[in-house]
Length: 306
Image (cartoon, rainbow, N blue to C red; front, side):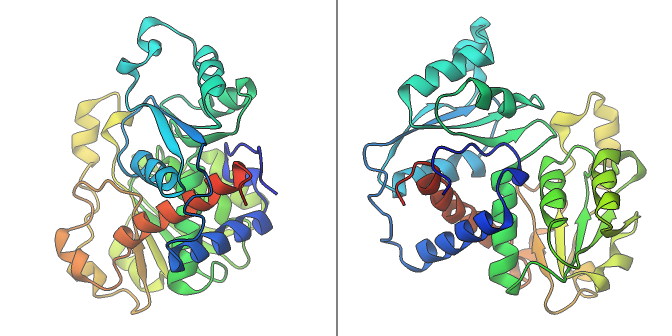
């Protein structure tokens, strides 16, 4: 069904197609031997023009667990991009060696451009502040596994909502589900972009914008924390002023629902206190593991081995 398809943004796949991926990921989670050798002989080109830990390692772990292999680079200085090679040429080259490409790039639209020049599927692992669709699949699978559903929920997003590509992707994806309410919590300098709010308004999705996290906690089924991203700021003083605006601690967790789950795309800096890790509602490390399973499901699907 997904063989040969690229994934540039969450809406490239229908809800039914995503449900198939979630079911496949859950099957892989339950049976660690399932699909273990399905990608033997397949190569994944891992092209990371921007630093990454979880996304890069989870893709490489996913491919290796499926029996395939990886090649590529973890930063642009070790690629011909440092010599001035165009992205189009890099993609053409990688597509001639590999069966699929996963790419992270700091420039918005880079993944779409790559998909137009590639003869093999391209998976967007983050393009600037634009999209991060496999993190969105991870987030949705985490919500489904931990709460048993994705619809009829109130979801709070807190932190850097202006530059946060994970927030933008997940917001767009959640707008396709039934009876979703969203609460956006940020300083005025880091509010959600107008184009995302326009999408929600056009779909009649209920949402509100606030600055106080603690007052919003009792309403939430899901709290999606994000870090203030130093790499997106042009002014160091602005980053320093805003980076510790929100810190989730045990006092704030105390007013949240017993059924609340706390997600974070990671890495965290100061926005979640380490003391929260022992709270059973802290789900961000489980979320990271779900990311490997959903990427296993995605790779096996786009490579056509299932």
